[in-house]
Length: 318
Image (cartoon, rainbow, N blue to C red):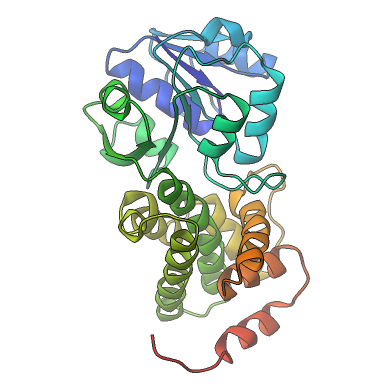
């Protein structure tokens, strides 16, 4: 049995993919109305319209009912992960704990795996990350992800892989964490470029310089550059900077157009930018794109001023 905490789009999509591959899945949801829809209609219409839950997915309101299996997937937003681990002492070290979120915790400046290791000492902690949209996974479209863990990676890789969901394993947990987190920030910036009408050439330049920032910070924090060149870094960066399915990209487009954005939609890159600016300042690392995203998202700078600052930076070798 595989337990999944969180019945949003990604948690539901993973439940569908794993169940279709023959796994027994228990899915936890917080909202009573959503639980009723999932149980009675076998659908999550708001998050994944048109997708039907297989019969071997059971839906639960009590967290204890989904624990104790082969793995527990934590498919909650990054800024909610610490609260999940704190509020539910029943989540223990009996099964591997796999984070399915991307970002940096604002309170502690830790990534998902580090946060799990601190809150649940002794647990096998991992992160599932990479270029993926929930709708694609739920529809059975081919998707490749990175599974990063320092312990027992082979067994988890086999457990969570399916005919349409291919997992690549790495022990560079920090690199996988940072790739998934930082690409959301750059995706916001790419959205700003497109929303402001600056063109695809400008987006390509932004993505390239943003990727350089990602690698610069990751290496300074002990990650390997080659991890950032893989699915969890470059692969995810390409996807989220070029598709309207990306919430971070859409948020950036709204910023670029000076339009309002639905506050109910989780945009992980906003909090990540704020946290990464602090991390970079502590280590003296130059991250102009990230700083620009943080300033724009917090309304501390106007769009034209932000573009002017980036374009007026000193000329230097690439």
